[in-house]
Structure formats: structure tokens, C-alpha cells
Image (cartoon, rainbow, N blue to C red; front, top):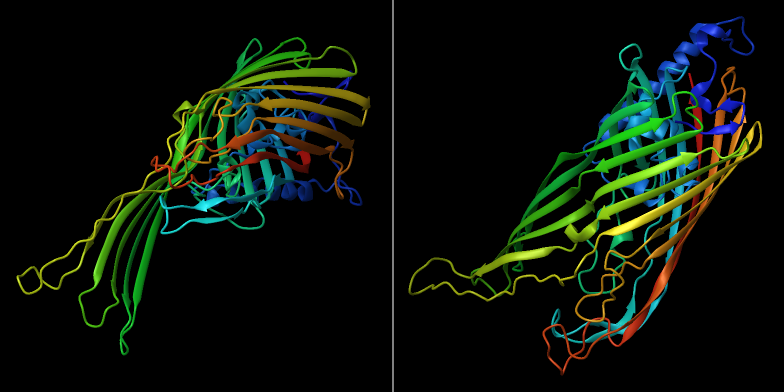
Length: 505
């Protein structure tokens, strides 16, 4: 099901069939070959980008703001349709909706700037995680989300259940990829550190089952990162220090499935959609083998450990939504997402089984000495599943303009609990307000092709939290204070917007 710009006209997926109209290039004499070349280029280069970056793909910009300004203006309520070329993410079943076009293509940009409340004059180091006590300010300046989005829907076999392929990609513009495990104990907005700072790829297929039912499935790509580092540090004159680092990035993927019902008689008037997503975690393993000779010609001290983390985690989710055209000028959207965050694994790195030795050989004259090294420890939190309601409304201003607005609410995965005890992971609940505008044009560059330009504006308000740390440090030592003491306020906002251009061939 797709949206309308007026009561008389479906969206860009329901233009007239090419066989029923004369395709002309403006300024030429019916040169259709130029248009065919344009279509091939429009399809090929995003596909190549998607294949190239699929080994990195894991961000979830779709859950964060929504792919495409059309769905973003509706607060991400895209399960029941209206996603157009970005259907491969929002509901792959929408790919199977029959249209008069063979290819849908969208290209857009998105920008979101986080602003968090300052955290000042709190304990940042204590005797639990350092050799002294330090009190100061916490850095709450996080990277903005800036990137381009590409969506494609191509009808591979129209005569076989309208079998259609879809691809959605997100590519950051300020860096190809940025990874950061964040802080384990210092106050940390862990959901906003780097979750949208790498390419994302969603590949899906959809088909028309008949009688208004459509089915689709896709793959949400992630990765596993493994790194090995070895270093030898020399302090004597006439010697050299050395280091080697090797890493491998292996792709992994989690499937997701979609179901869509659109009224056979009036597919644009009513529809319901369902999407089920399986979880995917981007694991990180780092193995370090190091040695340092720091006291004359004494034997070097060997230090070895393995550190584990989950850089990014997308939960299992069930999304149910509906759309209803209640009048000739308006259409309402409602959606509920159930996200299983109770199985969440944090991104902080955990040092396992650290070992040290200091010997030249295992003999009475050169016995091996060891230093006891404490293993890592990550604060234990209780995570909760969350329900995310989304509401949107489209209002036709004219045959060529449509206004959108949306609202969504996401509760904290901590169930409203704050970090008064050990640890300072922060995830305040947030209200999401969105506005959008869609414009229709009859020509694109020198081609007689109808196209749509969509804009959206988003504001996300993080509910204020007041944290007061309990007495003692993380081990219960009452002579020391917990990191984050005596307390602070957490909250802030995210401001952004975007634009997307959609073409139908």
C-alpha cells in the first residue's frame, strides 16, 4: 500500500504505464535510449555501493529516525506502507505491491545532532578503577549522524507473483566507519555513542500472494571484528621497539520477515503490516600480547589478555501497524513496536584472564615472577523490553503538495531505573516529534519523469533524570566514592532533519 497526494491520485508507485504514454527527453526528438541509459546508471551505482559496504553494514538508522524523509516525517511508522523505495527496510512485503513501474529509486540525506546536559564536578576516577581519586567534568559531546540514504525497488519477475528485489543503504559522510566501545563506568549515553556511525545495508525480496496479501523477507547485515596485537617495548639505547596489529572483519546477517495486507479494491485506502526482526550483535574480540623491558637488561615483563565486547546490538523486534485513508485529504498511520532489549549486551570491553610473566628461563638462577592482574568488570544492569508507539498523519495541501506530522515515544531499556548504584549507563526515555513536506514535480532534469521531493524535521526530547549516587565505591568501600558521585542530571535533545528525492521508471 502506498500513500496519496490527493484523493484522485496514488503515489509515485502508481504512475501511468510506460507503454501507455510517450516517453520523451526534453529538448530531443523522442530519444528513449538516453532515458534507458539514465535508468541503468541510476540502478547500477547504488547496487555497487551496497555490495561494497555490506561487510560493514550495521547501524540502524531506520530505528533511530526512519529511512527516507517520507517515513521519517511520520515518526517511522512505515510498516503499513508508504516507504516506497525504502520498503526493503520498513516492510519487505511492500516490495510485492503491484505498480505500473519497474524501478523505484530514492536518494536522500539525513542529519541529527545530539545535545546532552552537561555533567560537571563528579568523580571520574577512584581507587576502584585507578590509583587515585579525580573529580571533574564528563565529555558529553557526541558525534552527529550525517549520511546519505539510498533505496531501490526493482521488479525482477513481474509475471511471477510480482517478485521484487529491494536494497536500502546508509553511508556516513564524515567517516566511512567509526567504532567506539565508550566508557564502562564514567557517565555514558551508550545508545548514541557510535550506533549510527557506519554503513548499513538491508537487502530484501517481496512478492504478491493475491487477494491483497503480500509477503517479504530480508537480511540485516552486521559483522564480527577480531583483532590481534603484539608489541615489545625497549628502553635501552641502541634498541628498537616494535608492534604489529592484524584484524579481520567478517560479515554476519540476521533475517527479518514482513506481511502486508492492502485492500484489493482500494489498496490505497486501508492496509495493515507486520514485521518480525531477529536480533544481530556485532561482536568484537581483541587479543593483546605485549612485553616491556624497562629496567636495564632485566627480562621483559610479558602482559597478555583477551578483551571482548559487543560493539552494536539490534534487538529482536515485532512491529505491527495500520494505515487508514479517512478522507479525500487525509490519511492516518498507527504502529506499535515491541523491542526485546532484555537480552542486550553492552558495548564496553571486558578484559579476560590477564597474565604476566617476567623471566629469561625457568631455572633457579632466573625464576619466573608473576604479577597478579585484576580481570575486567562491567557493571551489571537489568534491561527491559520496550514498547514504542508511533502515530502519523498525512494531509493533502494540493495535488502537488502533502504535509506530514508524526509522534513516537520510546521508554528506557532500564525500565525507568536510574544509575544510582554501580555504573553510569544512561538511556533516558524520549519523545519524538516529526514534521514533513512532500512535493511532486513532472520533470526531472531534462527528462519527462514525475518525481517527488520530501523533507522532514525531527526533534527528540530526552526525559530529565536525576541521579544521586549511593555511599561508598563500587566494591562497598565506604572511604571511597562511586564514579559519578555525588550525582548529576541526565537528559538532552536531538535535533535534525533530512531530504530525499524519489523517481519512478
